[in-house]
Image (tube, rainbow, N blue to C red; front, side, top):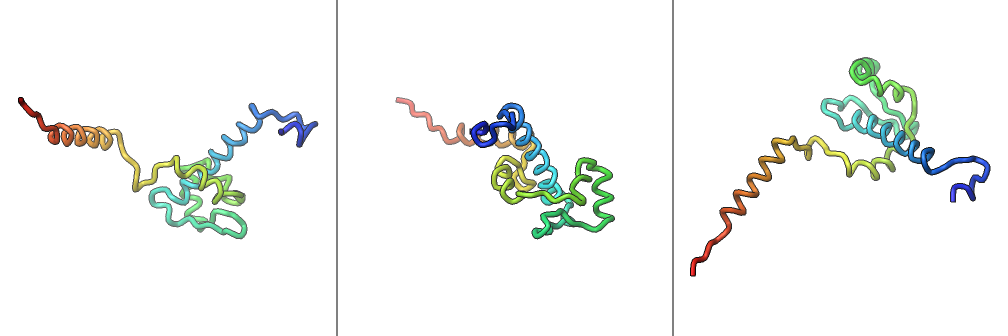
Length: 123
């Protein structure tokens, strides 16, 4: 299909489109973490220009510990909302995140509950 639409572009699904998809997902993750990360309520969104906005002090502080975010200080990120619909379901939120210890505890609790609910009948 790609060759029909762009016959002289010499684009191949592998690696060209897969690379673009990986880049989009990586960039989306960076912006998503800025909006939804712990203690990141200082970031906002200019929907009209599709920019991440914050005061200079907030940007400077965040960039010092998250170098990959510098590119979005003055660069718009198109399709953020659409990509969020696609990718957000794969991301654990702070509310839903679990550590390995939490998961093991949950499994053990289910095992205990299952053991306690089993009734043994002797005939």
